[in-house]
Amino acid sequence: MRKVQLGLRENAGLFSILVLMSAFVGAMVGFERSLLPELTKNWSVSELEATLIMVAVFGLSKAIANLFTGKLIAEIGRKRTLLLGWAIALQAPMLLLNSGESALIILANIALGLSQGFTWSTTVIMKIDIVGFKHRGTAMGLNESAGYVAVGISAAFAAYYAESTGLITPVLYTAMGIVFIASLLAIFVIPETLPWAELEAKQHVESSLSEKDKSIFYKTTFSDPALRTITWAGVVNNANDGILWAVLPSLLLASGESLTTVGILTGIHASTWGLGQLFTGPLSNKGNIRRLLMWGMIMQGLALLGLRNFPLLWLPYILLGFGTAMVYPTFLVGISNHSHPTWRPQALSTYRFWRDMGYVFGALIGYIALQMRAPEVAFIGIAALTLLVGVVFRYSSLK
Image 1 (cartoon, rainbow, N blue to C red):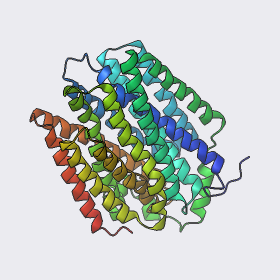
Image 2: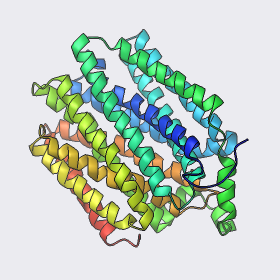
Image 3: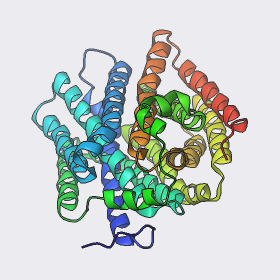
Image 4: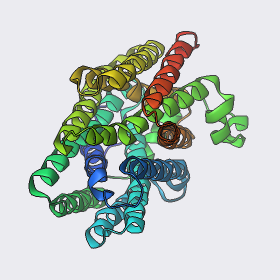
């Protein structure tokens, strides 16, 4: 029987396993990011249009799963929700192994998006449950770092292997192996973390009756100034990532660059994003939330302008990755700090729903730019919006 106590050091073993779980989740999406051009190359639409479709479908599926994660956790618990996510994740590589038809590829992408929503949201909530307030920023930095370093490594590996061997089947078997190991850990090692959340709730002022009766979705999206500002900034952040994911690889391949080059550049961005959070996560423990969000969004906006002009230089990818590292764990800390433990899972799920809808908005921006025959417009537009959000944080009341 585990002793229920809050703290990062006090729960080091369990926290480490949950960090590994985040890495497994990230690896699954990294495989897809690099294999998308290969999977969709025989579609009747253009490569860029196919990628936009896949990113939009993934983002919408993940967003919906995020939204329902809070409700599922309330009904069946954290542990079972995590297991459900991994059960759905297994369907993605299995579908891709058995068919190359476009409908089944889209179905596999839906399965991946749903699983990402359930697994990543649940592991985030479980980590927040066990570490308490003091080390929340460090915990989120480690969580997001593990996930996005894994995205970078798996993306580079999948791209290199597929191009050098002409095979994607071993990559899909690797993904199935990850699902198997993660499922075993979820069944036999990871406990239900509700008791930790209940312990923290006892240390808080009781959530008022009006808060309990009010829709947490509405509160997070519209009525609470701090939650609203962070949530909509998350939408813009993922919209620029959606454009990077959907538009840039196709443009590079169309200009004659290799799949390996695309994988390396994607890996640089994701790995910088991941490793940077080891440093930025702890900073949010110290009351730097507003400044981290302001400078992080400004850095991303400037980097996107750089990518538009110099898509083969490493520096814009590094700046974009580090700018994202400044905001990603800080978003989660900000939402957690402004929500009561009794309804925090629903607030986090709502935030993550809107944040991942950013992928859909990014894909739409990319599609509009494509119809205008000016893909660079997508980079200019989202860069301007990202810079604007940075200015909004400059004058926000967040601390």
